[in-house]
Length: 394
Image 1 (cartoon, rainbow, N blue to C red):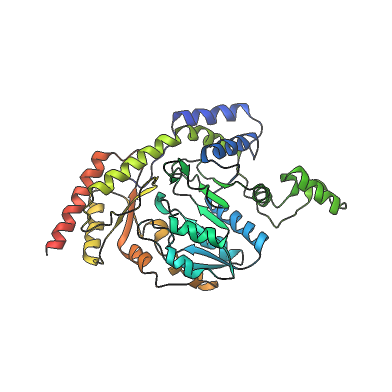
Image 2: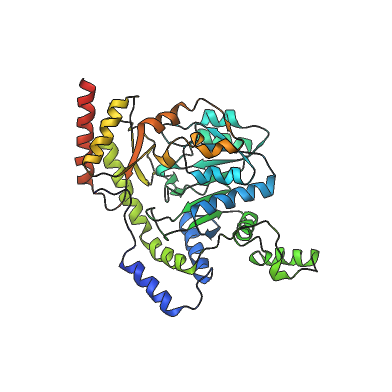
């Protein structure tokens, strides 16, 4: 069976965990978390990183920081992403503003983005869906010109490149960037995530929000300021922010330190698989014109070029018959603005959502990882093309 995800935890990782368990007496957030944060920052190309217990927690931390800095308002988000991109916004009292996507990147449509920006806009979330770089020059110019706070959700795109010539990774453009280490991603700590930044103030806020809002997690200067202003409080239990408990464990960090050594090889394999996939798909029936330069794909997209319910049904039947696991709607199940939980919250939909609705109804993805070889990809694609040609001929 071609599974959606594979277990990438190998013997070296297990041995690292065993050695840690046999030799450590501290298991909560500690020195291994700090070391993993430092190694991750060096790998990504940022100054600071804060490890949290999931990519969703990273979402919530980023929106909490936006709310703390700028107050209640609107956050622009693409309609294709993950539920926590949106649930973090509404649960923290902000208003999500949904915009359509660019078919070539599956990220923010620049025209829709431009039209959605208002005097209530507090931040823009860029989702690098399925591992494509969603920051086109047009998107970059709009955000730079407007000086808008930017959050990059890189949870499906570890190692994708913003600038291939200079080897600059995505996750280094925004004010904050977010990563997930969920099982099946490019690197796993089983559950886990990271909030990354080049800004010291944002780093200190992220550390405090991670740990109940406590000042003892912050810099010496911040701790001293609160001790001076609140002499009646115990410095070890001074809560500057309405924070969360998003702390990771040492066990997750030990696994991350072992996994990061193999990350670049995993990315290279996924990139090779995507190229084989797109090169062999029939562009007359399937979308193959993605902006895949520098991509680092979590999954392989399969989106019909035209609206054809009969063909899509037969494509799904063919994948099932070949034991190929897939997910309808691609990232997050398709158009997030159609999800029922939003009925309870204020939200805005700014355009016709034509592209994301097409992906929602005529798109899916299959798994991508080292368990998928080029031979299997070509065999499956051959059959998919065959089905498309047969249906198209009728």
